[in-house]
Amino acid sequence: MTTTRASYTDAETRMTRARAQRLGVNRSRDPVEVVRDLVGVQAQDMPSARLALRPRTIGVTAADVRKCHDEDRTLVRIWAMRGTLHMVAAEDVGWLVGLLGPVFAAADQRRRDQLGLDDDLLDKAMPAVRGILGRHGPLTRADLVERLDAHRVRLDLKTQGPAHLVGYAAMTGLVCRGPDVEKGEPTYVLVEDWIGKQRTLEGDGALAELTRRYVASRGPVTPDDFKRWTGLPARQARHGFALVAEQLTEVETVSGTAFVLKGTTRRRPRREPAVELVGMFDEYLLGYANRDLVLDPRFAKRIQTGGFVKPAVLLDGRVVGTWSQKRTAGKVTITVEPFEDLTEVGPRLAGVVRDVGRFLETNSELRMGEPQ
Image (tube, rainbow, N blue to C red):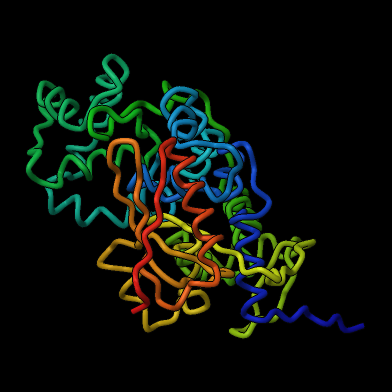
């Protein structure tokens, strides 16, 4: 008997993905639960990483998220997907680094060699890093480099050498980010000291876990989406889908065949359009091979400038503008630069702006620019 695949319109694909990411629906009171479900949140800019949890949680503030990271140690920043800094649940650190770390450590070898970080230096540096952070951590990068000098590991802070050394230590499972200090400067700690013994998953077990959770949190998706999001080679990405094939359902989208986790309910747009503000580097824009489904190509350069993916205004899952914030004493001003007329959803947008203020624990004000 032939089974007919569910057919998703573009609007239904957007809404199903938004629900999978807990954007405005299915919110949680637990920020750790949300990060665990998403696998990770890009965190090269920590205020934006915290802000990513606002539209996905209820009653949570930026201070709550900071506490999870700096005090409770239930959220941890490591180099994971795409070799980029991510905030992940502490329980996921070990197996994620074990799966992804070797891929990106190998990819970075040429650059390390150019910086003088050859295997001999690394063999000397890693035990030194372990000893220094074990006795004195958390330490800033500058403090760590200063102490390494006594171990005959000499690095120039004016070069990228220290960053790549720390990156290698992180990708081999030795270190992770600790609490930020003054002006958001990061510190580094030993993983084993900061969060203790880690859950281990080997080989295909780790790849299957990552694939299943990726599909669950972002579907409908394709192996190519998974490849782009993880940074894994195409062959390994396809193998991940093969490992969990029995847990997936094929669906037809306008762009072709994609996959959702079995039991996923197709979501249709609401009668009243859903309005949301997502921050810089949000997973809704980073989680797929391209953004054509959610972003008119005419506006692509207004969303991404160089390596920065700007904060976006979403209307039923479509990007319809950018936004920025300016903090002053006792207030945050949210300025929206729309791509189209948003007059009809103005009251709902104002409500979202008030929620940004609640999350940041300050008053908030909306300023609306003219469509361009």
